[in-house]
Length: 414
Image (cartoon, rainbow, N blue to C red):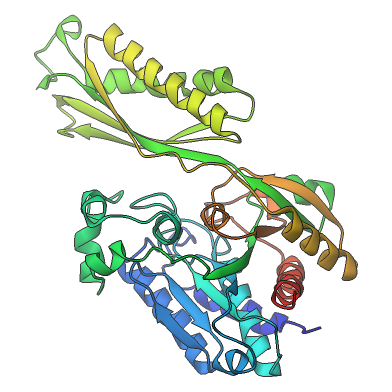
C-alpha cells in the first residue's frame, strides 16, 4: 500500500491552475498555444524535479516513466498507463483533465520515491489536444488510429489556424506526428481519474464513480450558402440569407435531439457568418456541431437526422448547404475487470461507489480499443464543468487519487 501526498497534489493543481488564467477566473490553454506550452513546460519541470524521465512522442503526448521503478522490473513488458490532459476549452475550469494528469504524476512519483518493485512498468501520460481544437481527442487518436500527414495538413483550429502551422511553430514535426501510432503490445492496461462533469455523484452522496462506458462522439460543420447583399437596400423577400437559415437550424436542435432519443445531445458552440459584416446579408453561415449518444446506432441516427434537418431548412430558405462531419468516435464500453479492481479499491478504503456512464468524451475511449481500460470519477461541485465555476472538493481529489494509486498498483502487480 502506497499513500499519495494529498498536499503536494493540491499544490500542483493550484499551481497548474494559475497558467492561462482569464479575467473571468477561468482557464484558456488551447493545445500548442503559448499558454499550453507553458503548462507543458511546468509539468515537465515537476517530473524532472522528481527524478522522472519525460518523453514527447510525435504528436506531442508526454509519456513519463520512473528509471528507478523500471530498474526493478522488466521495462520491456507492456506498461500500465494512467493520465489525462492539461489543455482546456476556452475559459474552462481547473480540474477537467488536470486532475487526472497531476494525480497520475503523483502516483508515479510515489512509486519512484518508495522504490516499489512492481511486476510491470507504469507510465504517466498527458495526451495532446484532448479538447479537440484540431480533432476530437487528437493525441490518443494518433496513438490508436493514426493520422496521415495529409490528414494532419487539413486540420484547422477553432480560431482558424492550421494545425500544421501551429504545431510546427511549437517545435513539432508533421512526419513524426504521422508516425505516432503505437505498435501492438505497448499498453497492458490503463486507468484515468477524472471529475464527473455532472451532478449525479454529488446529488447521491457517492464518493467514487466506476465508469462503465463512454459515449459516442460526433462533430463537424453544417454550412448554409446564400448570397451576400446590402443590408439596407435588399428587401426581406428578395434575400438569400444564410444567417437566418442558420438561426432556424439552431432553434431546431433540441427537437432533433429529442427525436434521436432521450440520451442524445447536440451543441452548436460556434457560428461563423461570412463575410461577417454587420451591414452585409451573410453569404454563408457555418455552424460547428458537437453531438453525442451512448450507442453507435444512436449516434448514426442522430447524425442522419441532423443532415436531413439542415437540408430541409436550406431548401425552405432557397439555399444550398454542405455538411462536413468527422468520423464518429465510437462508444467505448470499459473493461469489466478494471471496473472490479476500481470498485474493490474504493471499498477497501471505506469509500462508497457506484457504476456510472460517461456522457463526456475522454482519451480512455481510444485507449480502450487497444488495452483493458477503466475510469474513476469523483464528484463535481454543482455538476459544473467547462466553465470557470468548475470545482471539486479537495477531500474528493485526495480520495480519487488514492483509489487511482491502489488501482495502478493492482494492475501493475497482476
